[in-house]
Image (cartoon, rainbow over all chains, first blue to last red; front, side):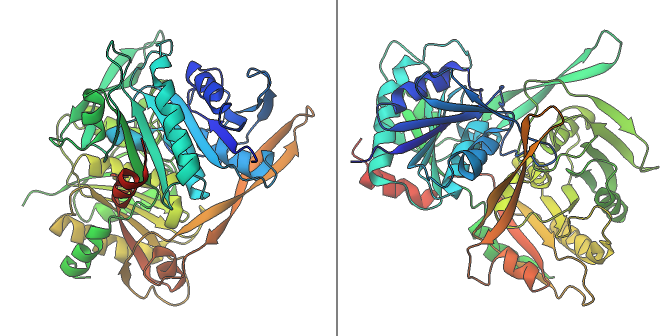
Length: 256
Length: 256
């Protein structure tokens, strides 16, 4: 049987520990090609590079694995893989991550990791974003290996519903093993911004955007619940943002 | 009656013609405050500035309207308005645009214009992104005035369903007046990327990301259909990306 072609990207940049782990694991499942940002791109959401040029260079940091680093965003990386590097070959799987930090809940919309996965899904390729809920780039993330492999193998085997990518978050490493895998919905939560105002050496003000996570959701079927209870959280996500239930409401209420 | 507080942002930058039009119109409806990027931010998707600092400066380009320019993305602008500038006052409406270029269909996920509107919606503020399907920054967009006002007045009056923002696109100016307003779903379509490879003066290659829009949707209830038929397209969009229909599928099919 022909080995599946697996495209690997991320948003922490090609030299991050998380993508190194992901490449090692994907080599067990197929032929791997890496196209990842040449520098960290956290919080880039679904940005693409439209008013600027892109650079692309081959990288040898994964030894025997073909790899490229791109000056653009995670979404750019998947686009340039598809539109230029792969010359018409279509990957069987796109995986992104393993991100150093949580992409549960509302964070999915700010997530560069998930934008790479959604780009894959837009191209009808089964696609997964992996994140571990530990912001330290040096954290031990070896506990996620089994589930990364299990979920990737399952998706290679059964595919995914059309128009759907997976947002997979792993709990931080604890003494207890991860209990299992839960398929969830996105938690209703938001970031309460705090702007840290400072003065630069020239006397001018500047700001750091920081924030507190506010969970507004009492349910037990969402990704924050799964993470808090030491489960791996799998949320199927869509790039069709239409709020279908609201179409009828607007057609009924509006007088225009 | 107290005048409503209206926060105006965009992604083309504070000096664009589109935001100038929007500010002029919103002054008829309430007290206006502008917080917009200090430079163009097209294609920024839902990016936020997390690894870098932000600058914020007052601007006087709208004369009697309080305005600030921010070095960040459209999403940053709404966040800093809420978290710093407005000091606890909550806007009654967030409007973003008028964007010079279409944000119909899949473009909604790449859209800085819509990220500002979605930030408003996350804060439970009725929010609208306006775009005109004409990419020229010098285009005559005066034909959108009536519908910008009508839709904004309607939203100020009846609000919007919880968790929903509006993605409003206007057709390009034609001889015929816009026929009316259609509430739509997001068109199933994608961008077929084309990478324009060039060589810089130092002999190194670089790329421009370009693309062709591929409409895969035969329906007549979506935003591309509305625009093609000279209607204003209103798509209610959600920031809950969960593909609810897929949760059951995965729970049934998966063996893990």
